Length: 511
Image (cartoon, rainbow, N blue to C red; front, side, top):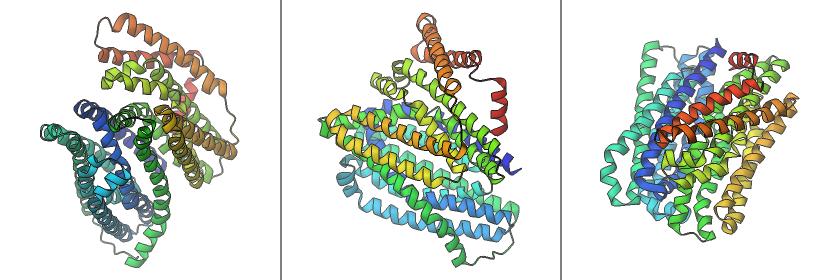
C-alpha cells in the first residue's frame, strides 16, 4: 500500500507540474510580450534572492516535517505529529520575518552592490512581504507530504500559478506604463499573490484535515524534544541546500555583470540574460517534467529493492530508467536542433531565443539524465555524493563565467552550462555504475534512438515545410508538427527495437 501511495502521489504531483508548466508558459509568453527581454532579465535577477530566502526559511524544515510526520503517523502518535507541525510553522515564520526584514531594509544595498541593478529595489521590497507566507506554506505542505496526501500540495501549486496570472493580467495597465522597474515589480507582486493564496489554501486544508480526523491524543514529546528533533534534521539539510542554492545564485548574478565586462551595455546584458533564463531554458526543461516524475518514483523503488538486497530489481529499475530518460533526451535534442528557430518565433516571437535553443539542444540528454541519476543515487542513500557533484558542477560554472564570459561573451556562458552539466552527469553516472554494476547498452540507449530521432525530425520537417506552413499559421503548424514528430519518433523506436512491449510493461510496473 505504501508503494502504491508513493507512486500515486508522484503521479498527482506530475499532473500538477504539467498544469503549472503549461500555465507558466502562457504566463511567460504574456510577460515577454508585455515587458520584453530586458524586463524578463530584471525579473530573473530577483529569483536568486527569492530562492535563497526559501532555502534558508523553509527548504530544510519542510523536508524534516515530512519525515518526522511520517514517523509519528506510523507510530500513531498523532499528538506529536501536530506539535511538530505547529513548531515548524512558528520556526519557519520566525526565520521568514528575519529574512523579510533584512531584504526590505537592505534592498538598496542588495540591488546596487550584489545585483548591480538599481531598478530591482522596489521588487526586492515587495518580495520581502511574501517570505513569511512562503515559509509557513512550505512547512504545512511538509505535513501533507509526510501523510502521503499529495493532492493538497498539488492543488496549491496550480492555485499559486493561476493567482500570479490573474494579478498580472488585471494590474498590467497600471504598472507597465511606468517603466521596467514597475513592470518587474508587477511580476514580483504576482509571486507574492501566489504565495499568499497557496498559504491560505494549505492552512485551511490542514485545519479541516485535523478537525475531520478529530485528533485528541496528547503529545508525548515536550516542546524541547520536538524542537530538538526538528532542528537536528533541518539544520544539515538547510546547510546543504543553502550551499548549492548560494552557488547557483552567484552564477546567475555574475552572468549579466560579466557580459558587461565583455563590452555589452547594461540593457544588452540584461536582455540576453532574460532571453536565456526566462525564455529559452524553460522550453529546454519542459520535457524534464517526465524525468522529474521518474526521479521522484525512483527513490522509493530503488530504496525498497536496496532494503531487501534485491540487486536484480535494482539493476532492472536503474537500467530501464536510464534507457527511457535517454529516449526523451535524444528526442528533445532533435526537436530543439531542427525546430529551434520555429519554436523561438512560435512561442516568443523572437529569433534570438531560437538560436539559444539550438545551442542548448545538444546538451538535453545530459540535463535529463542528471535528474534521473540523482533520483537513483538518492534511492541508494547516496545524497552526500549528489551534493558533492552539484557543488563541483557549480564551481566549474562559476569559474567559466568569471574567466571566459569577459573574453567570449555569451558563448563563454554557454560553455559554462554545457561543461558543468556534462561533469555532474558523468560523476552521477560513475557513482551509479559503481553501486549497481550496470552495463551500458549504447546501441539500444544511444545509437538506435539517435537514428529514430533523426528520421522522425526529417519526416516532421518535410511535413511542416510542404503541407502545414502553406495552410496554417506558424503556431498551428508547430503544434501539428510536434504531434507528427512524437508519433513518428515512437514508431521508429519500435521499428528499430529501441523499445519493445516488454519495456513498456516493465516501466509500468516500476513507475
